[in-house]
Length: 240
Image 1: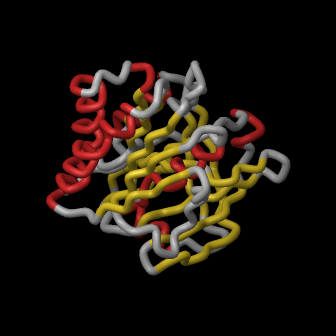
Image 2: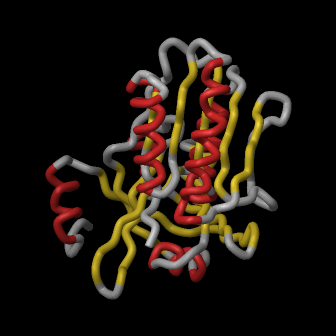
């Protein structure tokens, strides 16, 4: 493995990334635009271990060129060597592969760069800002930081999606996607200060499209003064 992956593959190889071949065992359409797969891991979990919000790089063919995208593991089970993946279906080679995936299909996965550090001190309130692409990571985050209340700005609708938020502790604010993420940015700018003012040790987690994530992370750090170590931001996809 690792051949024909271009410069990205070469860099990951230099960083001693670990490669695995995973096999689809189950496929389910959760909604017309959201698909769940279950895979055997090819020894991945036994080799790397498991941590919250853990993700892998999957390799796809994009018109003959290698293309990698990161996906959060859903319900990883080292005992059985299996994990789930959930795909928000839109345009692109990753979504095309997920739509067509059937039991027996294989996909190459690389593990490098993933990690999680529990916030210290523990957050008194969790702020999560995401969308269908980052929903599996949001679920993992909420399960890990389950002692803290949370406010979640979700770009899109959760109708029919596998959200694990607890209504008793987690408030979800759905925001329709419009103006390439500008509507979400405006809502967060208008509402986030009041949430942060009401809690002494917040933890802000942002995972939207790359441009929106960058804008909101800068806003939280520079304008609202949230310490850098209390803001985790990762762009999950690039808007056209």
